[in-house]
Every structure is written in structure tokens, then in C-alpha cells.
Length: 246
Image (cartoon, rainbow, N blue to C red; front, side):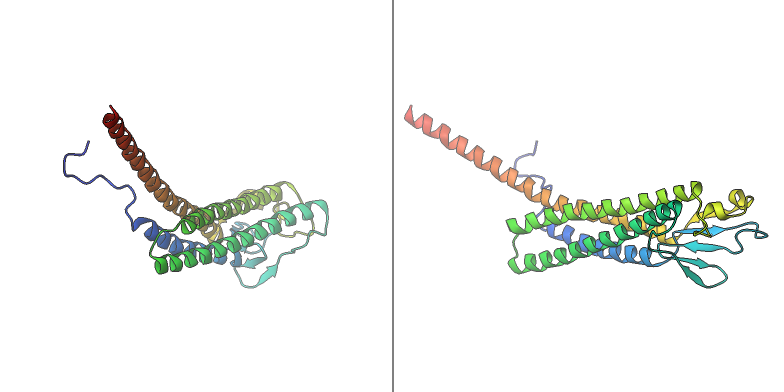
């Protein structure tokens, strides 16, 4: 219980929501940049064969659209599923993951533009209007969807890697089942820079989403306090009126 003369603790000070939105815009900009780098660098996995007598002859990294070799040079990966069943399934998963990755970055970019517009409008009006609050909540939900799409891209990437272990196609010369038998147990396979950047971008996207939704909560909390205060005052006035009537 607060003592006489003390100030009641304020869970959401007046400047906090606007500060949170500014922080979210910076974090989201970083997330979009990392996601874009992740999509363009062919380094989701790095494969290093220990034996090069047969099968794989060189270390290589693989992304959505290319395979790049350690000794130099890159090879484009097919982007159309127009081969045998195994080829179509593996290629389809990779292209779908790539499409989701790009689409989620588009969603994040549009949300970032929306946040910037909100910040500018907020400073001009110097008031947390209802339209601004609803816009923050809407952008937070949209950003949550963008983060889920990035997670789905990660999931499809892992499914593609799983399918590659079980399916075989002569049209995929660097597929797991095209390696020499001894290379399948000795080759070192590691996640690359693109994979790590994708996860970081995903986490930052979710953080920004919760910041936007949290800033809306501050407004809801303040409204609830104001409404409670109004009800208390009205109740006191009613009691006073009843006493006067008596």
C-alpha cells in the first residue's frame, strides 16, 4: 500500500510507448538487412569431404540458388521442378523456402515503413491517438506473421535436407546419395553463415512484434486505470447523493 504523499507506480510512463516503437524500428531494420544477406549468400550449409578419391572432390557451400566451391566458382541450382520425382520434391522444397524467405522480408519491410510513418505522425501530433495505437497493434500482428513465415522457411530447409538423405536423383549431382559411400559417413556438414543470420533475423522480428504489441498494452493499461478512476468517482458521487436524499 502506498504511504501518504507517495506517487503511485506507473507501469507505462508517458514516453515509454513512443520509445519502444523507435527501438523496434531500429531492430526491424537490422532484421531485414540480416534476412536479405541470408537470402543472397549461398552459405546455408558447408560441406567438407574428408576423402576426395571418389565422389565429392572439393568443399562447397550451398544456398537457395547456388552451390559455391572452396577452390573457386559457383554453380546455379535449378529453380524449376521439371525432373524426376526426387528432383521435383527436393527442388520444390528449396524454392518454397526461398519464396517464403523473400515474402517475409517484404512483409517486414512494409511494416518498417509503417512504423516510420507512425513515428513521424506521432511526433507531429504529440499525442498517442487511438489511430496510432490501433496501427501499432496491427503492425505488431503483421510482424508476428512475418516471423512465422521466416520460421516456416527454416522448417522447409530442414525438410529439404532430410529428403536429400533419403531420395536420389541423377539430376542432383551433389545430393547426399550421389556421394561416395565412405563420404556419407566421414563428410563434415555444418550450418553456414546464412542459416545463422536467418535465425537472428527471425528472433529480432518476433522481438519487434512483441514490442509493438506491448506498446499497445501500455495504452490499454492506462485506459483501464482511467475507467476505474471514473467508476470510483461516479460511485462516490452516487453515495453522496443518496446521503443527501436521506
